[in-house]
Image (cartoon, rainbow, N blue to C red; front, side, top):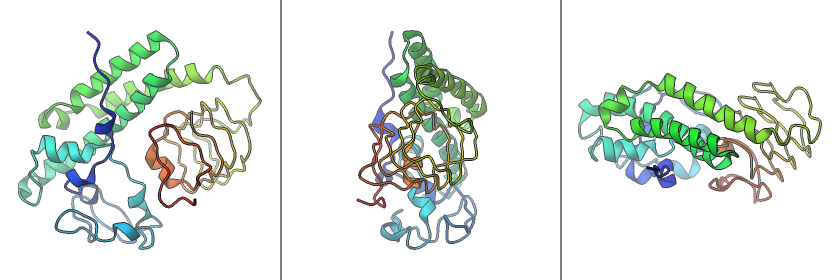
Length: 277
């Protein structure tokens, strides 16, 4: 029997139904992204009693740009409401350790599901699409299980399976573009392209998985079928760039970049509020 795909809404953050787990479970060090140090499993100093952020409307101005690019892929509300039945770590302090651990695990599982949903849509062949759905189901079984199942998840194995599946889809999709136009040899997985000048180029079919594109100039570039899984797009210039059919792009990557109303994004991703009109 065919299994229904994952609900897209379940993979989007809903802070109104979360116990501010991103503001507590993770730690961060003082840097360009965070104005202060914060150890893991401790509340941020800007966290209000109702789990809202007291500086939400001015995070970047106050030195917390890292908060504006974080995406839990809906793990926050799933942990808060489903796994812990709406009882917060403040109401039940003894639950904090398991709650924060579950959040860290489930966020990874939900990110996998996000990418697999994209892969299912992008896959050309029926066989590949079936393989994607099978892997997706194996991740969903864990992600939609109880607290014990989530805490016992073999995340490393699932990461490996998902990574291989996404690679197959990427190769299948990019195969149709590889011979269309010559591309610079430096466009390869894991490449250091920080500050690279790639504006106006047709990069179609390039594999930039895990590449460093910090502050790269991609204005007006065509990134159709470009694999951007895990690519670092912090401060990359995307004005006028076409990413509408880029592979495995996330909202967090988009939020970390610099773009404008002329930037074309894939369906399901939104232009960040800090982008220029």
